[in-house]
Length: 321
Image 1 (cartoon, helix red, strand yellow):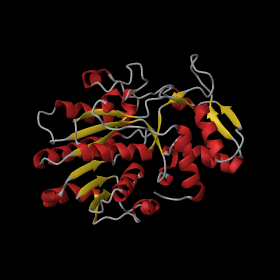
Image 2 (cartoon, rainbow, N blue to C red):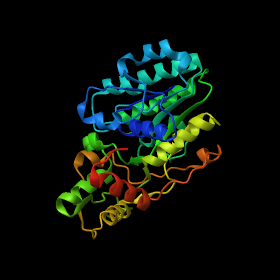
Image 3 (cartoon, rainbow, N blue to C red):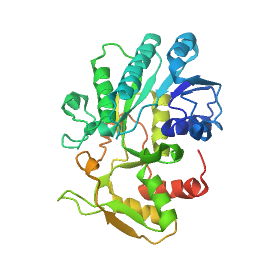
C-alpha cells in the first residue's frame, strides 16, 4: 500500500495517476476531500482508501504493517498568505509527525520541499545540506518548507529511505483548482484564449530586460517520474533539487504557449505590482548533479515539449490526468 498526501491537489493527484499507470492500485489517498472543485483530480484514480488528512496519523498507526511508502505531497502553498498558523500546522508540524511515524515503522518517506526555500537566489541554488542555514526564504510558505528541511537534517534517526525534493516551477494538468497559485502556463493559456494576447511583468532589475527573467520550469510528468524512480530504486537518502537544470526566460515560455495554441505571439509588458517587487525571483535554476549522482535516469522535457503536451492534451479540452 502506498500513501499519498495532497492526493486531491495538483502534484499529488498526478502522482496517483502515475502510480496507476505503473500498475499500482493499492493506494491510500489522503487530503481534505470536502472541496468539490478538486473531485475530478482524484475520482478517476484506482485506489482502496480515501482518508481525511486529520485522521491520517491515526490511520497510519492502525495500518503500518501494510504500508510500503508515504509520499508526502500535501501542503499549504499560498506564497501570498500572511497568517503563519496554517503553515506551521500543515507544512511543519504535520510533516514532522509523518516523519516520526515513518521512522518508527521504517516506512520509506518522500516529501515535497520547494525551490522557494532559496529566497532571492543570492546564496545560490545548490542542494548542499551544509549550506541550508545560509538560505533566506522570502515568504511564510518558503520558510515553513525550509524549517522542515532544517529539522530533518537535525534528526539522528530516520526512515530507512527518505528523500526531500526541492520542486522548482512545476506546471501541468490537474491545477485547475489552484486559482492565483496555478502555474504561469495555466494563466497564460487562459489569458490568450480570452484576449489573443499575453501580459508579462516588466523587469524592475537592471540586469534583466523585460521578459528575460528566467525560471527553471519543469513539467509535472517529469516530477512524478522522478518520484516513482526514487521510490522504486531507493538508492540514496537525501535532499535533492528537482528542476530541469536549465533556466528559461518568460519570453521562451510565452512563445512555447503561443506555438502550442497555433497562434502568433502577441505580448504586452505591464508594471509589476508593488507587493511582489521585494519578493520576486528573477532567476532560478536547479543544479541537478546531486540527483543524477544517485544513478536515477533523468531526461526532463524542454518547455517546448512539456507545454505542447499540457496545452494540446489537457488545457484545450479541460482534461485531467
